[in-house]
Length: 294
Picture 1: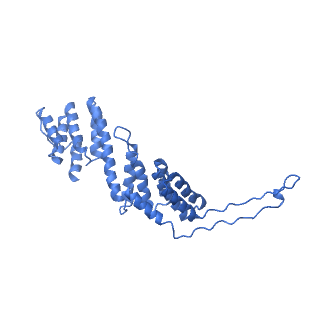
Picture 2: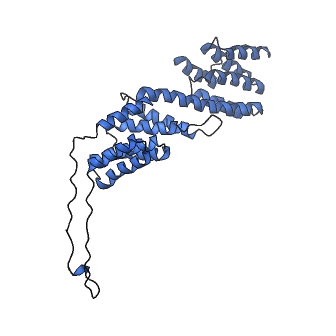
Picture 3: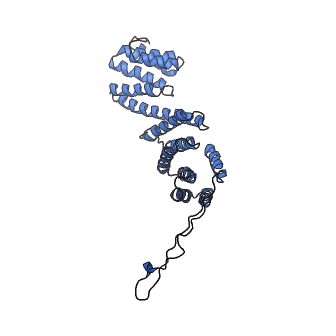
């Protein structure tokens, strides 16, 4: 996606960081030839050598090269070495950032989320932290299934994107995050509607009403709000709770007067000699006021 392409370009260009590359570590000793290495009658000598660290800039550039070659697993390992060899440095921070990106691109979404959460915990005020929130949100968002299955990924994506918008309202990722918030809310509302319809068909009206209530309470202004109000009219009327049925239809008509759902609700009430009417002591009336304010 374009926003990732743009971000990667920026990160790649940033390989020449303001801090200098750490020099290779000198050998602690050229050799050890004292009695510690003498064993056996032949007096064999053992030599211990310390392998120099790879310069941080070389590790970083090697990771970038593997990213360019789409070797995302290899890139993640190279960037991970920066944390191991240069802990508590800006190279380590940069390495964790790029590890997270490589894991997302692989894609290894669970690993990307774990790395992103670790980055956020270690560097909450970094200039790149909004980007890391975005990667975490996208990792969940990319795993959202169809509405017939469990929606935990949608819930997590909604949570992370909401945090991004609230904590970094001026971030370049906010507009896309807001769009994906709307998509995930619509997805979660659709799941509630599916379950509500299931209960309605089986005449389990209280359970159906609870689901449609959640749609109105949690996911207002999604495309499912109109149907939820109609289904409440239907469920309450089937239970004989006419005042709630009339209130649901009245709120539907007030907010969506041209909706086919309102026309159907009005026709349904007429079969029982009723008209839409809002009873102000109804819980639906309180939700209706919230709808009016949006």
